[in-house]
Length: 248
Image (cartoon, rainbow, N blue to C red; front, side, top):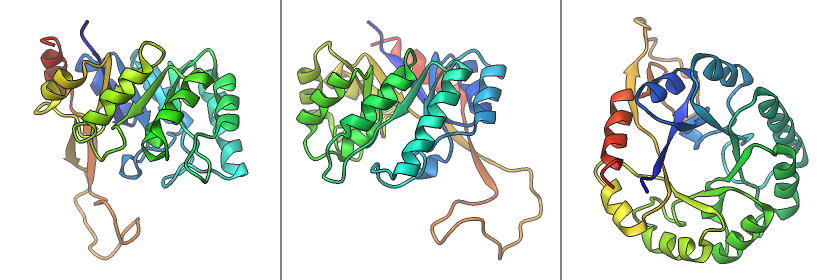
């Protein structure tokens, strides 16, 4: 069975481009520089209006860790309600306790709130203290899949751990490897894992339309992206990776 390739995107325009390249599902985020946070409801509506692709939408109120305040948790609940009203395919989230365990109580509340939408536990899984226990917790909560690099910086580096996780999971939940997967290593990763789904970004940096570039004004902090370069999903790269995956 050929794997499903989920494309990680930032913005409504990239949803259109991913669909043009043949993708069947995307993870829609904003601010991938932070690892992805919740996109605006306007972005979600535009993506749904301009494409028919399945939208897995990130529900993450901020960058950083995955231990949230009561107010941040309330924001996550409101985001899930709004996304459910919009009729997206699914939501992507994960909450941890201060000791590095899955926050079962809060995650259970969000899963119940989200249904019948698909629920993906994201790479918060890669920051847990005990992956074997966390896997059982996530399965017991009824999540549909886990996005993970096996607790390493990339899926290739985490391949050995991913094999263990997939063996433990069996058919009880989908393990979706992600992070650092590209056309030059996906065949090798697939030979090791034979996963049902993979998660990857296929983007190209594009210069903005701005011609005037003031050199002394910045919109971010010390570590910043250029204000005059944008990343969009590259439909040709999406098409190429899908054609490659057809050979698996």
